[in-house]
Amino acid sequence: MSRSKRKWDHIRLALATGQERNAGFEDITFIHQSLPNTSLEQVKLDTKIGELSVSSPIFINAMTGGGGTRTLEINRDLAFAAKELGMAISVGSQMSALKDPAESESYRVIRTTYPDGIVIGNLGSEATIDQAKTAVDMIEANALQIHLNVVQELTMPEGDRNFCSALTRIEDIVKSLNVPIIVKEVGFGMNKEAVSRLLSIGVSAVDVGGYGGTNFAKIENNRRENAFSFFNDWGISTTVSIAEAKAAGKELSVLGSGGVQNSLDIAKAIALGADAVGVAGYFLKILMKEGVDALIEELHLIHGEITMMMTALGVRTIKELQLVPIIISGKTHHWLNERNIDTKQYSQR
Image (tube, rainbow, N blue to C red):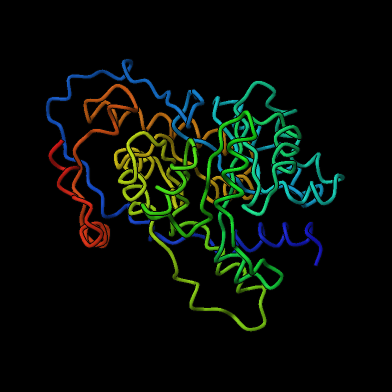
C-alpha cells in the first residue's frame, strides 16, 4: 500500500473509530474558590511551548499530510483556523514528503497559509539528522516533533519492528538542529522514566500523547487480517502521563494531549502541570463534518470558556492555573500512588 493511501486510511479510520471518555479527566476536580479576587479582563492566555512563546495554551496537534490533495486541503484549513486564533500548529509526519517530494506541498501549505505562525515539524524516531534538517527547512519550522509510536508500528501490517537506538538518534538531532526538539507519544502515554531519559539528552519539551484519544492500535487493527486486540487498551492515560512527566523534572516543558475534547479538559490538563494542550481528533471531526468556519467558532468558544474558568478559580495566567488546588480521584489517584507520586501535593498547594 502506498504511503499516500495509508495516510488517508488513517484519517478515515480515525473519524470512524472516534474517541472514548477514558483519558482520565473525570478523575480531576477543581476546588471552588468563593473569593477569587479576579476579573475577566485580567486573564491572559499566553504561555510557552518549550522555548517558544505562544498566545494560546491550545495548539493544533499533528494530524496529517502526505496524502495528496485531500490532506493538503485539511492542512490548509487547519492552518487558516490556527492563524485566526494565533495558535501554534503541528504537521503530521513528514516522512511521506521525504520519500516522495511531490507530497511536500501538502505540508508546506501550512506555512504558506500561516506565514508568521508557530509551525512545528514532525518525524518519527527513525529519522536521521539530514532528514530532520530537511523536514524543518520544508516548512520553515519553529520546532520539530519527534514522535514515538512503537505500539502503532507493531500493530501496523507494514510497520517497523526495530526500535533500537531511538534515544541516540534523538540526541543526535537535538545536538545538530538549531530549533527546539519536542518528543511526542502517539496515543499511548509516557512514564516518568522515559521522560527523564529524554530530559537527560537535552529535549526541551515532551508531548505526552496519552491513552484516551485517537486509538492508533484500533486503527491499525482495522487494517489487519488478524487483529492484535491486546494492544487496543494498551497505554497510560493522559492525566497520569502529565503527572508522570512533571514528576521527571520541573524544568521540562510538558504538553498535554490525548482525548482532549473540551475547555474543561484543557483547564484540567494545565492544572496537572501541562504548559500547553494539544488537540487533534476533536478539531478534525468538527472540520470534516462542519467546515473551517465552525472550527474557528469552536476555537473562539473554547478560549472564552477557559478565560471564564480561570476567573472563577482566581487566576490570571497559565502559570497560576498550573498551581490551583485540585482533587485527584479514581484510577488516576490509584495509579499515581502506586507509582509513588504524591497526589496530596496537588490538593494542598
